[in-house]
Image (cartoon, rainbow, N blue to C red; front, side, top):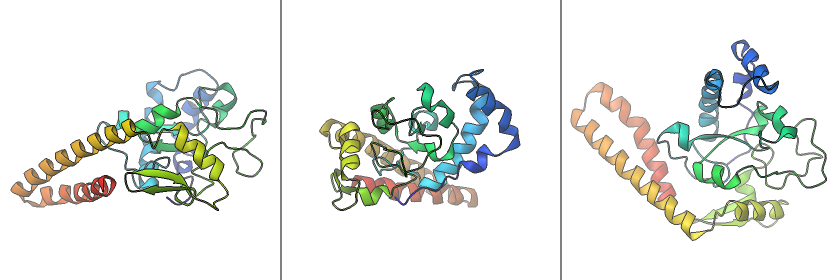
Length: 225
């Protein structure tokens, strides 16, 4: 995955979201407040395209069933920590993560101990403990081999950070791999059933619906191989 572009900025600059974002940052409302749903949906839509439905951490497809559960807006620097709340709506702090990576990451602090809280997000002068999707090419830092099996890429300059990400997210843990494989297989079977149903209908509308499903099926197959 190439270095991400801060595409969420396009949503964050919209005038209709200015007040509700300010209310969250000032502590007037919580992240779960329904008034934040429109801006969250806009952010998801932009990131979905930028990331091509891939989780930057594990480099695997984000299984799209029940998007509100399996497609988390992930904050690289966790918004629940008071010192990072100011980055809750900073474009370069927002990614879409799969459910597994989001859960394993939890509220980890990804800036080294004793390092001052940055004024703004930049790789220069900030000691991130993992490779950062907006400042690092994740596929140049972490190799994902068949299995999948993950390893830091020698010579990337981010070997220590890559090793920590792999360990923290338990990417090589057999139980995590088996659970993931089961969910992908279930999704593949569901896609095949939907495609078969649409193929039987075989009208203009059903054929239009088949195109994105076929693309997703290819991604799922690639993840399973």
